[in-house]
Image 1 (cartoon, rainbow, N blue to C red):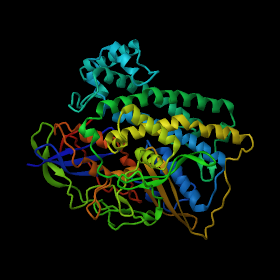
Image 2 (image 1 turned 30 degrees about the vertical axis):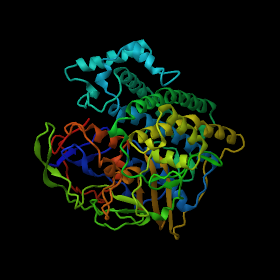
Image 3 (image 1 turned 90 degrees about the horizontal axis):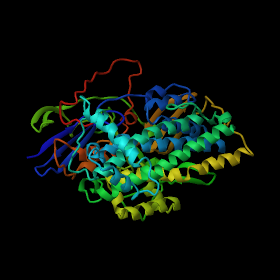
Image 4 (image 1 turned 90 degrees about the vertical axis):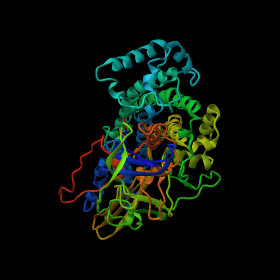
Length: 578
């Protein structure tokens, strides 16, 4: 008899997300639905505003992806107004972008996704000397894994474990789950790097603030360029950026890369981790200009997992529909013509498996109706996965020499085929490989900036806005979670329409009018769950995308009226995760 498992809310992500799966008697997922359960809004706030002010507002879409939206919104205005920004500004933006990517990827694995791979409780049983020696299997210069350092880490977590409130930040998870594959010693290594990554978080945030003024929500971008000219002309500030970058570079090489390699070796036979993806279409857009004629990552489309062909991306083929989303207009619309009018219909009465394994009454998704605040983007009618893996695969398939080298080296060291990339392990590894590429080559942009400043100190272009003209433009590029695009129409000197199509919209959108699932939902179908009261496998797959639901949902009432109130009870309606 089929059973419904509800995971609500999915935590350790940005925003509110719910997953429901229908599981058969063998524990295999027969169907899956993912819903964004709360909304927020900025797109319609842009209407009627001066386009020069909108980017500062748009970065408030999210508290994590601040610079991503700031940059793409600024680029949208520049594209609409036909502005070519100075070369120095392009390079500064790349350096800020590099800092953001490194910050996001390190934080994602260690503080959001890592405990899906690392069993914290198991680490308490580790032999310190064996763990210290184990670290040298994955790095010639391991970080924070000396016997005394590991002893301190173990003692720190042991104090949490002995506290009356339990493991503190590590409480209420599925420790001891059968799909954890690391040894106690390997878990201790990962835990040590979890704590070390907290320090890296601070350093990387400082890197971006050198040029951005602050972090989060930097302030130095303007339509036409950047305003941090005094910083890039200050040798002390430039040196500070480089020193901090190299500290992070060392962590990426000798902790992050090493831990993903370790995980790949240990998890490559775990079916729930190696399960083939449900959607094998990938889309990426070139990003991170490091010189006048080179970007680190390439644009393109891969269909059906075929790495022998990469198609050019045609932005006219992008649409969003709302057949199963809580909006009034269902039809597929190009983002330039997008509409954002809410139509909340709620959930339906039903049953699901409770935390104790018994059947309970719950409010469930109605797959025949509307069930998410996220729309369903499509490229030429097809669902697409976007994200670091998509970026790596497109660049790899196009023969980008830098990408080909790091991918082939990793596959060789992990002893896995390229086909293994089309999995949850591959998605998690793809994020690390992107971070490694930035760590290896990001300073090319730094060197290019130093050289150009010797002959050119321009950082901002001049322009005019003709109120008698109509403009439209798009700011597009890959950000830490995948391809992001901001679309604007300008009329009478102000914004007349605005849409943001974000990575988590591409990945987390509901089924479309043809009944075709997006990446999240499709990835869950066919998954075997060892214990339906502890659905770690579901959490691990969803976390591998690094969901940002705040980015994916943008709705508000322009008059400030109360629309609805929602009370979230994590114990009602299914299993809660940490």
